[in-house]
Length: 329
Image (cartoon, helix red, strand yellow):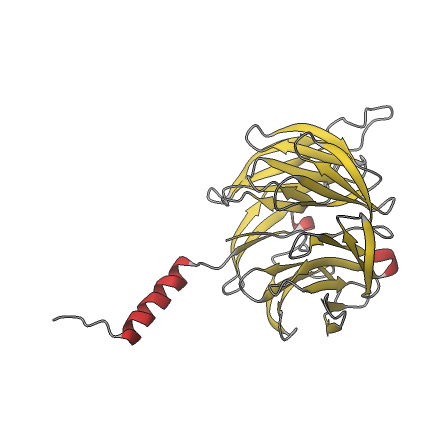
């Protein structure tokens, strides 16, 4: 029997092959007080794996090839009086998803808030608020390569698309430190509004959007001028933010007001969705049209449609609270 490939059949075969080849992203979520990290299949919002033995994880990154997760911990051992501030009293956890467990740990000075990884997967940058700077870990050797002082209470880190610079928000003095990755030195200090925390680049990489929780706003910072050019009023205790698939919509959580806000950065118009209790960390999931939003007060992640701004699913967590998510395709 000879199979004749009609245009319709050919189209269906190509569509099926394309769907097979383009698997949905995997979203890794650290669960803080539950001392674990989970993997979620973004195609159906189901938990596929749980990795235990990670002490109070908050920051999280994944290597570009998906081979390793590196989690920073909120746990630290108190230093004795007179001890050097660069003395290691916390650690990063290296998890191998395929093996399903912690492979090794890296001693660091001070608990870790958030993390970033260079596009080549070589270096992990972690903020240490009680140490006034970041650590740079060489992933190949599992060792701290160096520390870089940035300012009081460093919070969040971004790495530019060209991997030339890292940007660190310093919530203690209202600045963002620009670090040249070629020599790990601070080249400039940018204004960032009061107590800056979470950050995301604009689609073209020319601006940084940064949360200012104390005043309930998001500031737009021009990288070229190093100045705040605009601000958007969001609500009390803003926390997580990310930019949508359309490249212009900011999604921002406001914990105290129990809402998710979508800001059109071109028109300045806002839409909001009531989420309770305490919407917290969030990530847009590229190519899916979804936003994952965790709760600070219950083990839940809401799945929100970016266009309609409606909850389309919920992920019941095994415990803890969702913190900085990491995504791999």
